[in-house]
Image (cartoon, rainbow, N blue to C red; front, top):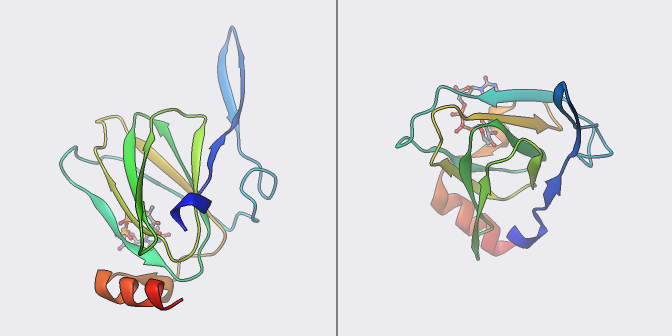
Length: 135
Ligand code: T46
């Protein structure tokens, strides 16, 4: 459910040289990291996502700037504002996501437990709802 998607505060090491934030596979992500991608050059009024994954598990962190991620389990919705480089959100299987309100400097980094597979995407909302409500 949307309530199972956890907000994680990452370990932040700062000193007079600046800050360093760590994400360790398994320990912080809860899964081995198979893929990393990041989204940037976004526009404030252009939303993205609009899909769910059948099996993929991910951890998302806005390493620069901010954006909002709306999570939907087919029954309820929850919006998470990612506005700190040490704040991450987990996104498990069968969660519809929409990302919007990107700041100009937003860089949304996502760690995933599987390689890219278009067959894992559910891109039609009605199909997602039917599957989510059947399970
Ligand atoms: C997700 C949200 C948070 C690849 O070729 N390899 C990849 O690993 C990814 C992630 C994407 N692509 C291709 C597929 C599309 O032609 O890059 C293009 C843009 O991907 P998409 O339209 O799926 O982007 P978003 O921002 O809607 O969704 C992405 C991820 O795809 C998705 O898994 O959970 O970010």
